[in-house]
Structures are given as C-alpha cells and as structure tokens.
Image 1: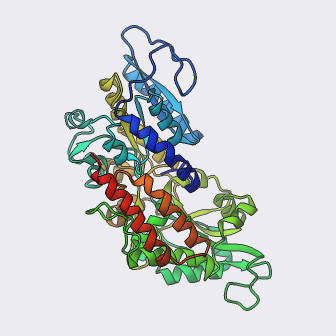
Image 2: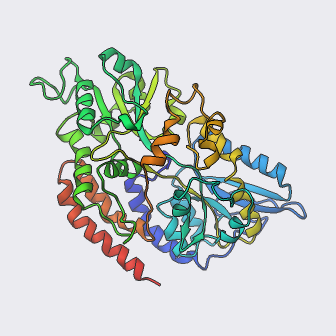
Image 3: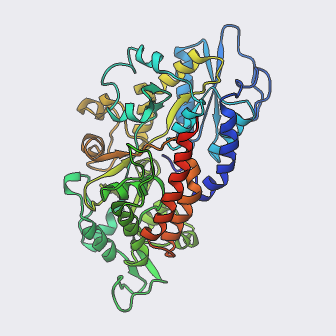
Length: 469
C-alpha cells in the first residue's frame, strides 16, 4: 500500500463503477489501436517497424513516477524491440483503471491493488503468467522470492496472475527530540523488545500535553487545547489490520475466505484503537487533524505529535524531517505482529502482446527495479537476496533508514508479519464494513456492536460472490 490508497468514501463511491466495469472485463477488447487516442488521453504514436508498444498504468508519488520512468529507459535499452508507455495516474486510480476496462481500452500491464487482485482474477481480467514465470531462470528460480508469502499472495488455484511489487508494513515513527526532552525511552526496532499495549498507552499519555502542561487523566486536562498528541494510528487498511493481528485476530479467515472482524480478538483490537481517542484521549480525532491542516509528518516535525503509526512507505518522505527521526516496531496486544501488504504488477488478459507484457512484468521483479525504491525508503524487499547481509548493504543507508531499521526485513516481517489476502468480491463489502468502522471511530457504537451486524452482511455478499460461476 501507499499514500495513494483510496479513502473510505471514495472507495464507496467507486463500488458502483466496480460492479459495472468488472462485469465487462472478461470480454473487454485490447487497448486502442496504434495512432488512436486512448481513454487515458493523449495520442498513441505508432511504434517503429518491428517494435512492440505496450502500456503500463500505475499510481505513485513524484519519486515513484521518476523511478518508473528510469526503469522504462533501462528496460528499453536492454529490450529495444519493446516500448513501454507509462500511464501515470496518481489520483482516483481504481476508478480510472476500471473506466478504461469498461470502455474497452484497458492497459497492457498495470499496478493492481491487493484488495482487488482476486476479484480481477475471478473476472478473467488478468493474464495467467504461470508458465512464463516457471520457465524463467531468474524470477522463477527456487528461493528467489521470500516464501511462502510470495506464492500465497500471487497464486489462485496454483496459477500466477501477477507478481508482488515489494513488501510494506506499518511501524512506529517518532520525533527523537521529543522523547529526549521528556526524558523517556523511545520504542525499539527489535521486535523481541516490543512494548506491551499498556506501556504504549502510558507512553502516549505522558507525551500528550495540553497548553498548560496537563496530561490526560489530570483533573485540569483540556482536551480542546492540546499542545502535543501522543500518537496517531490510522483507522483503516493495513494499519488497522496490524492492530487486529497484534491481538491474535484477523480480517479474513484464510480457510473460509470470510470476514472475521466480529471475533473477540478483532473487536477488542478495533476498540483499543478507538479508545486511544475516546477513553485515553491520546489520539486526535480526524476532524482535529483536518482543522490543523498538517500531515502526520509535519506534526511530528513540529512537535505536535510524538508518535505516528504509518506504513513503511512513509519513510520515503518522513526522512526529509529536520528533526531527528526514529522508528520502532508496533506494540503487542496478545502477540508481536504487523501487517504485510503491497500492490501487484500484472499483465491484462486482453493484451495483444502477452510476450512483451510478460517481459515488462518480469523486469519489474528484478533487483534493479526493487532497489530503486528500497533505497529511497518507499519499499521493503520481497526478494530473498536483498535481505541477506550482502543484500542489505545494497539499499540500507543512514541517510534514509534510522538505526536498526534492517530488523524490519531480517526479523520483524519474517517472524511476525501477517499478510492480508482479500478474497474475490471483497471490494463490494466496503458498503457495509466502512460505515460500521466509521461508527466505531466517531464513538457512536462499540466495535462489538458495529461488527455483529456488518460482518454478517459482508459475508452474505462474499458467499453470494463465491456461488457466482
């Protein structure tokens, strides 16, 4: 995941488009003929004789955009008979992607969000690349990827329809000066020394101060005039899943493929996050953050926030902070855990150039491409060689990665990472899951109350999807 994740309400608005567009996916023709204007805009110039042109659609901040362009130049240098047209789509990606599918002008290759991946497979939108991958001496070699996670996230019924871009995972970011000023020990990157939930909450309480220096729990504490908040923990997606697995729960049962957010372990974890706002008063409401007009990075840098829970991808811009940045593993509830996630690179089943599309998807899984973004802090590697002592030297640097950060890939993810695999049809369930989560985090319902009804409704949707041929 990246900061280009769809917002909840944008995701809901998109659901109607998803239903109509995916229905057309199986019979969608190939991309617009050469020389015609595509649905993405712009004139597609005819390639030189003997040269195949394919398109590649994806999101990405300016750094990722630059990295893709660098990769295209490198790929075209090595493979001169294939040209890649980059369809950079940083806003409303899912809607625009499915809009092209519905219009009959899908890209040849694309970023595929992990939450949509199995839905797109079921609707025959993605190209089966199994035979090409298994025959490849590099990416098809045993042990090339971190396993079994790579195979588990990429395959459906034993067949590959994409390759994971990388891994990303939530952890703690903190302003080291703030902890030094308060005389408090910051969190550590050693997962074996992860804070307990109680230690985490108490640290956040001591870090939270109002304009008069009072802390939550003090009789004079003024919640309406907070000078510094102890923590911000996003209440959706990968960061919320990280809290749930840290309490021994999960979002989806890997066996039944149904939502299990109504289990005691899951509801308690969700309630724990809500209680950071409503009970412990150490975390600002989303409306409070909106009123400040600051990102979590700006709040950390200015001392308005002591700790930010965010994905590892955020290091790409948090490293620019003027204040010293530190990182730590997430606190444990019943166990040490975090959530692992990332988008996929896939070829579209409708491409007229499957061999060229495969060559590009394969290139995106080479060390050259992954190292670009590991070095900037945007990605964590999914390739085994980059987690070895020699491999770490290829991308870990003190200019980007705080002290001890290598433990993210040597210990934290291999031992304590949990991958969230969304089943086919999952995006449709957001119409019931999202409002229920909203009700919890604004304080209208408890997690147990909200999930009791929402999970039953969501699973009715998934069961209907499973029965669909």
